[in-house]
Length: 121
Image (cartoon, rainbow, N blue to C red):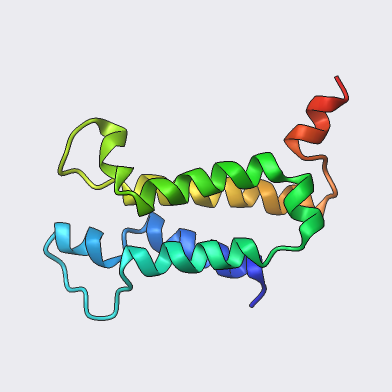
């Protein structure tokens, strides 16, 4: 499995709410579910393993992904609806999937990163 497939797999896990904290909230079994901290740590490791040229070219896109991960790490997934007690891990997981799909498409098709395209105008 390549880095992007692994990132998408984690994002899908989050989007489906299949992490320990989300399942506990809904009183569902958590035996084989990873904790959120494990998912965010693995996500960060994978992002750090990307080639330097991709990190530079798509720094804006990667920064957005890192912000979503920071929200998860810091517990700010409750703040998105401004209603404490409603976990929005799945919402952030959906956004991560979307952002990753855009990034993968941009890399696969050698599209300019946001900063690169912004510098041309």
